[in-house]
Image (cartoon, rainbow, N blue to C red; front, side, top):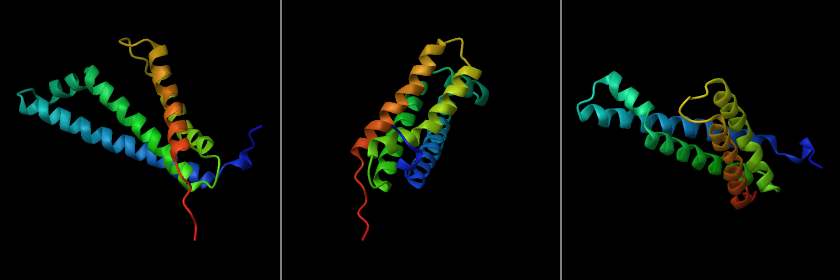
Length: 141
């Protein structure tokens, strides 16, 4: 049975922070570069932003960035925890999954069905698990 004492909460917190900050920062950078490239191609600022928000390729890139940082969060949490790496990896991505599910339900897009948004969020748990299972504990001297 899972007990809250089994988790190193500092490791979970630092993994979750890495997930949030990394995903948001890199996604913003990619979005700005995308809009800039469209503007260089002759699109106005508003139309470039609209084309970016309607682009399936941009969405796929953002989802991939998010999943990479879910993996990284799991790996960070597992490395900082002394044991149960996969459990720490999953725990580190849970805040992001909860936030993503809330956003998917509250701002459901008519373009994609709700199950699709939920599936994307739940896949994050798998990436956190994989990162956590790959993380090696840092040896303390």
